[in-house]
Amino acid sequence: MRRYRSVLLAVGFCLTALLGYWLARTAVPAPMAKPAAEAAPVTAGAPEQEVKFRRAERGPAFRSDAEALAAGALPGQRALVFKDRAALERFLAKAGGRLHLLGRIDALNALHVGFLNPDELAGLLDGEADISMIFPAYVPDPKPGIIQDGVVAVGDKLLRVLGITGDNSTWGKGVLVAILDTGVSPNSAFGSRISALNLIPLPADLADWNGHGTAVASMIIGTGKLTPGVAPGADILSVRIADDLGQSNSMLIAKGIVAAVDAGANLINISLGSYGDSGLVRNAIEYANAAGVVIVAAAGNEGLAHLAYPAANPGVIAVGAVDANGTSLAFSNSGNTLAAVAPGFEVNAAWTGDQAVGFTGTSASAPILAGAIAAAMTTGGSTQRNAWQAATLVLANLDDVGAPGTDVASGAGAVDLGRVMNAGTPGIYDAAVASNYVIAPTAEVPYPQLQVVIQNRGTEMLVNAGVQVRTAAGSVPFNITTLLPNAIQTFTLPLSAASWNAATPLQFDTSVWLSGGVTDANPTNNRRVESYLPAKN
Image 1 (cartoon, rainbow, N blue to C red):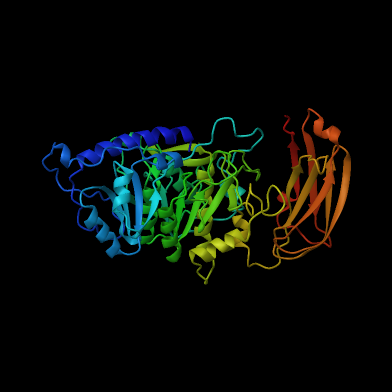
Image 2: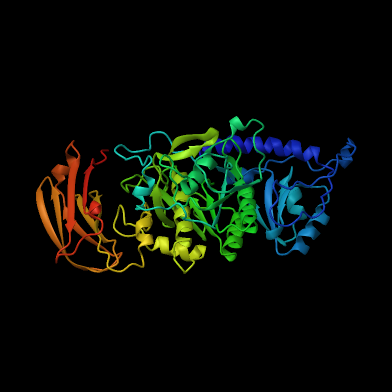
């Protein structure tokens, strides 16, 4: 989602809008489109009429759409959302052929219109429509140079990283997950059913098909040891809203959401985004939420202190990226509305042409969480969970990572399906070293600090657990008197200014153990050894 691409795209769309406008200048709006999802965008327009050249009959001269250009939106285009269908039809009758109808979403009473002059659109509006910009959207790629050193690839170990140790082949069975992306191609790694709605046509040569959507799908329904997925039993609805350059827009996102809901999807995954907040997309999200559909979206890969849209919108579960060890990745956008994180570095994924790739980005993290929700919907025994109940369960059993508690870089923590599946099982004792988190010196605290975070990831209260922290300065013991399930306890150690200014990395080795003869259910998380190299100015 690079900004320079948005400028080039804006210019291109402007030229396209001009050409389309003059070609369709005398066009008559088509009859009302059929409701629900169509396989392709609806464009109104009768056959081209005789061209008239008399100056008096020409429309207003072209005027630059400065408002859209300033907002980073597509010039010469708007979304209009009406209070009801009658208002929409009145507008169409009034507009006649003075605007170009680019599409419509009947479920939202929304039109996508193109124009040559903003004044002409303004003259047709009478307060019955909410106006929204059409923002470009992109499939994200991490920028070169912002993946920090020392991070650990997931590879084919996704299930192990997520705490899945048994057979998960039936997880997600009966759940329909819609993937709004570049489309999902057939792959031998998929055993599930895949249906498709192509709002953008597939390429004439399928060798040119962008594999991003296929990789996203494999995070959920991949089978086998090479490209394992979280919920292989789920069914996929592929909604192609991005072309093979990875380009889309907010109108296509909104149309894809509505199409997925109308097709019966339980979950929607969106691993692309924009940096424009579209009112039309917000309406589509509300439409999905009202139907009980959960939307999961990628936070974005620009390393920014705010999330991409629609991940940043209310009603969407925003997901950031961590490596195999739960370390937040530098490219993953951060923000107060980030819900959770999931693996997003070199995760094995399927690709077009029956290939496999290492998939990096929040584009991988979002479908992993979506897959976890699909799995939780189908593993409740006799109690079946709906999408929101399953999402609540997954988000209530996250592993704390990074800074103690909920934070802008990791939300409430990382997905742990092992904990989700055992959430109702009594008698589980699991003390974990969640993180060794370093706080840099500040004017108020002129020395660095180490925050050691211990989390109870079991289902029983921990009593008198021991903790030992080893640094270059020596070993320091701590004791946990009591710790409730899912709770954390933080111990803070001051570090010397000399160690902070050294050229060699700081080394931290933290261990936790249980007392009273209690057996820890997962001893692999009882110790965390890390190195930290302070960033020098």
